[in-house]
Amino acid sequence: QIELVPGLFLFPDLPVINPEDTHFERFFTQTPEGVIPDIFNDELAIVLIAENTYSVLSACSHRGITNILRTIGNCFHGYTFKLLTGGFHIHNAQDGKFGIIADYLKNNLPEQIGICHCTGIDKYALFRQTFGVRVFYNYTGNTFYL
Image (cartoon, rainbow, N blue to C red; front, side, top):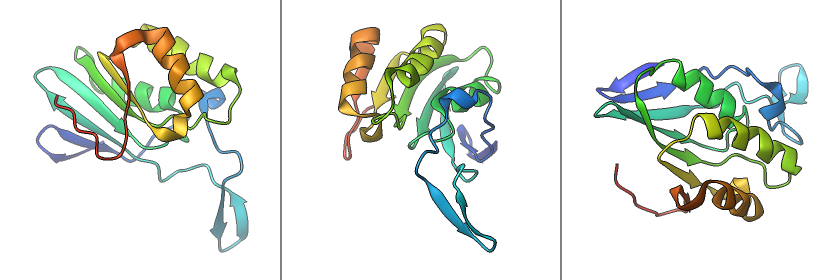
C-alpha cells in the first residue's frame, strides 16, 4: 500500500485469495499479443484511517470484495472496520456469489456498508435483509461523514 497523505492509503496490489469471489466474466483487454480476459490487475482500493478506525472505498471489486478486504484487513489489525462502500459486481451473478460475500462479512462486519450500483438492486435487498440498517444504497452525489 501507498500512503498518499497521512491517513489515506492506496492499495494498488489486490491479490486474488479466493477465486470464487472474482468477477471477470465477459471482460477482455487488448494487449500486444491480442485480446485476452481482463483479470483487473489494475484494480485499486482506497482506505481512510481515523481514530483507530478504517474505512474502505472500492469500485466494482472485480477481483472480489472479500479478497480486497482480506488484503486491507491484514494491514490494519486492531483497527475498527467503520465503513465499506463500493460495488461488488454481482448484479448478474447467482445468489452463491452473494453468499460468499455475506459469509465473509458476517465475520468481518463494518459499522456501515454502502452498496453501489453494480452490486444490483436485488443483491442490495439481500444485503439489507441480512445486515439490516447498517446497509445503505450509495449513489452518485451521496454524502456521508466518517
